[in-house]
Length: 76
Image (tube, rainbow, N blue to C red; front, side):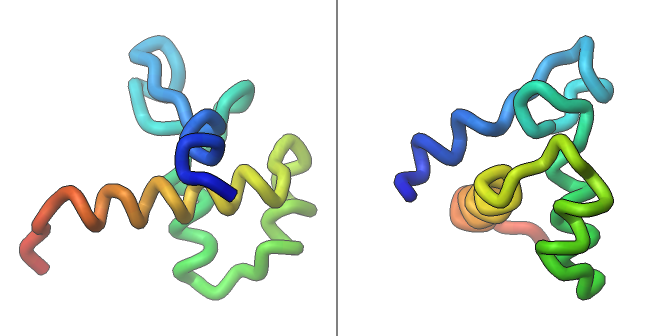
């Protein structure tokens, strides 16, 4: 799926979750999805635990993270 289609699933508004990037139409921050995946939570479990999420939303969160990783250098 094209990155631009996936990015349409991500929004950021100062009025929702203090401006954190979230899945469109939800208050689920992208960071929550990424933190869960990084901790070993399976995609199916995320979909069960967060009913508003779709598989495409999880793909969008990963694409968003990849975009950030390409655009910035973060000291670790």
